[in-house]
Image 1 (cartoon, rainbow, N blue to C red):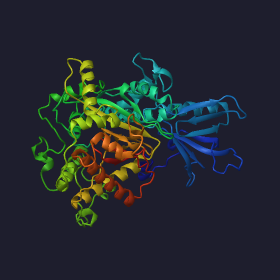
Image 2 (image 1 turned 90 degrees about the horizontal axis):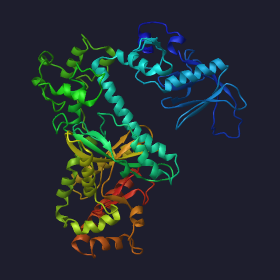
Image 3 (image 1 turned 180 degrees about the horizontal axis):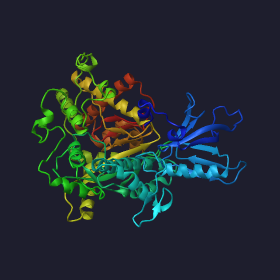
Image 4 (image 1 turned 30 degrees about the vertical axis):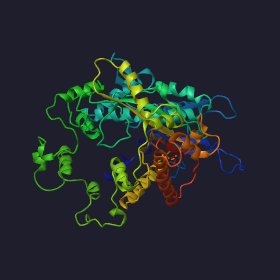
Length: 564
């Protein structure tokens, strides 16, 4: 907004630019220089866009330095009624805390009401004061009290078109769902370790699942699966000193109102882009899909041939970027704004120069097992049979293989399902993690995938495992669950593990004597995976390797995890 007004040459007053700002006395709770006395400092604070900013001076006076900032969403604003200093209050959430003082009682009340409004705002627009509106009973209300929800709906959502409102309902629900998963792991981190296992099912049971939520651990071309419900009693807690990852199970459904094989991008396009006349005051999934089912064009993917779509002939005519022309037509633009045009690559600079790293054929994750079998055909071994797996699962899977657990949960789902329910049901396990830099794990996993492609392209029978990781913030994320595997530490603590002899004695116990076909197969799996992760650990300089973050599967493969 400021940038747009600046382009128009209009002056922006401080009241317009920062209507929610003022001077406060501020003291830090934690300081590196502990020998120095903590003093109160006068700082200019601004509450806007659900953020609490701390400046050295007023932002409009020259180049004021932003000292600190904290998100207000979900924050607690508490006045300090007892203490040495008057008019003091605290603003804190799970990660941040501000302790500030106002100049007067009136100023204190104004700041507390302002910050609470920002903390509870919907977040679509900044929570600036809205004009009074009429509630359904005709009584004039404002942003305070019980009428706040009515004001938010009429004052914010009424400014959106039908398409925008549909996307707002979907993306807000999806964002809140993912945030709820990560927040559950974060909340358990502050509980006593002995109480976490009993509290985890309660937190999962209280988790709100929107009607059209899905687990975002997928590509846009994967099959659409809507989250139906969770299995709270199956939740598993990994107790560590610094964090509390959660292993959760969800029932997901696909094909309820559309093609069973419709992908994620095609489903979202069909529901939220092609339907321009849906009344989303009823934001349920049924209201959205019933309206879309009446359409004659059954779009299954966004990658449809543009020439076959009705109404696009005028856009397709002529040369140029078809999507860009369609965008300009929808926005009624005669020419692109210069700010956007400068970002588009020109034809002169579009020529690509192939570098050595770009010439490596990156393998698809779905075809990696086939590629590995092809390069290791000379070392083919007998597959692990069912009798051997029954011995292994007592140590690795807690007595229940993933296939058995999935079938058991599907039977529970059939007992709970309504006879009118439609769709294909699957069980999807995921891990929610907090207080860890998941972004670094994403980078390391991308490098492991790259090395995996290098090894297999060179014809080397080296085994590596890649799994999906989604970074939701700087210290939270979702991780794909590794099935039929346990850590080396958990393996050695399991009942019946040999007290002497180490892994060799364990391999003899479950796979058979040395030299037997099953032992040789498990030994080969162990060797090829150990070689791969030894090379990757050396090339990437991986540290913090111990028995707690090295997994072993029922087949004997090693898998390195936890690169945060």
